[in-house]
Image 1 (cartoon, rainbow over the protein chains, first blue to last red):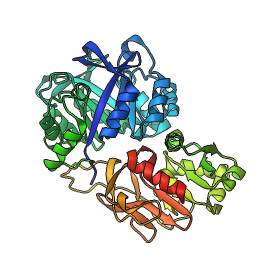
Image 2 (image 1 turned 60 degrees about the vertical axis):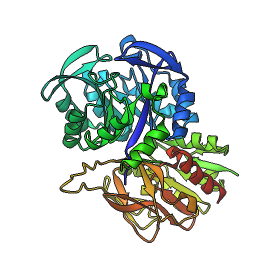
Image 3 (image 1 turned 90 degrees about the vertical axis):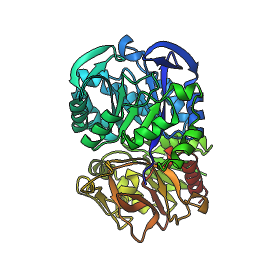
Length: 252
Length: 199
C-alpha cells in the first residue's frame, strides 16, 4: 500500500534555510544540504526547497545548491521559486532536481504548465497554490508569497492545473500557514475528491495529531511542514511512529 | 570494475550517476556502443514517455545494442518498461527482453479511497526473489513514479500492491529491472544498487 508522505520544506534565502511566520519575520535556521540530509536520514519521504526570495526579486534558484543537494541526498526533492521559463526548469532538471514547483508564474501564464509537462513529463511538475479563504467554498488564489490576490479561485484553478498536466498540487492555506492550528482539512478533502493527482497539504502543522487529521480528514497524500521540524518541535521518527500507531500507512 | 550508464534523452541519468558516486562506484555516462559493450555492468535508466523514447533508441541503434548485451544490465523505471515486449503508452513495440506487456493503471470504480494515478511515492516490495535483493529487503519501502505497470508473471522479481499487485522488479538471465527508482529510494535503494554492482 502506498505510504502517506511527510515532507519537510526548506525555504531558502541567500543559500540558507529560513522559515517565516505567515511569510514575514524571517529567521535563518541552517544549511540546506546539511539539514536536508539529516531529514532524509530521519525518515523524511521527500524534501521541498523553495527559493522564497525569487518570485518578487526576480532571483533565480541557485542551480549550484540544487546540484549539491542532488549529490548528497538519496530521496526525491522538489525545487521551487522563480521558475518562469522552460530553461529555468531544464537547468534544475540537469542539476538533479526530481520535480519543480511553479506558483505565481503558472497563474500569470497557465500555458507554462502544459509546456513543462510536455517537455519534462507530468511527474516533474508540481503546481503550488497559495490561497486565502474568502467565504464558504470560495478560496482566493494569491501570488508573490500571499501578498497579491488574483482573479483565480482555488478549486477551478487546481482542476485546470491538473488538466494542463500538473503531476501534483501543493496547496498552502495562507489562513493556516504559520499559526499551527492544523491544516485546511475541509478544503483539502474537497480538492482531493475533485482531482485525480496527488495533493500535498501545506500550512498549519502544529502537532502530530494535525498530520493524522490531514491524512484521515483532509485526504491528503502528503503533509508538508517547515518550522515544527526546523525548531525540533516534532522529530520525524516520532511523528512516523505516532502515525503508524494511529493506523496510517507510513514508511518506517 | 567499469559501470556504464546508457546516455540518451532520459530524465534521471544524473540522479543515477550521483547515486553511484555516493557508493564510490566509478562509472561513465555514454552512448558509445563499444564502451557500453565492454562495460562490466550496464545501467539503463529512464524517465519519460515510452513511444518517443523507443523511437529515439531505434534512431540511435541503442535498441539492438541493449538486447545483445551479455553482462548484468539494470533497467530502471521507463528503462524496465522498455525492456518488455509492448507498452500501451503510445502503443509501441519495445525491446522484448521480458515477455510481459506494459499496461496503464485503471482507477477502481467506485474509488472511495481516492486512489490517484500516477502511483507516486513510497510503497513496499514483497516476494523479492532475484540477486538484486536479499532477505533484509523484503517488505521495505522504495520510491515509485509511474502511470503504467507490468502485471505479475514468470519474470517477476518483486511484487508491489497498488490498486492490484504488479511487478515492481523483473529478472531474466543477465537482465534485471526495477519499476521503482533505487537511486531515490534512500538506504534501501542504495543497497539494491550495491547488490547490482556486486553481481
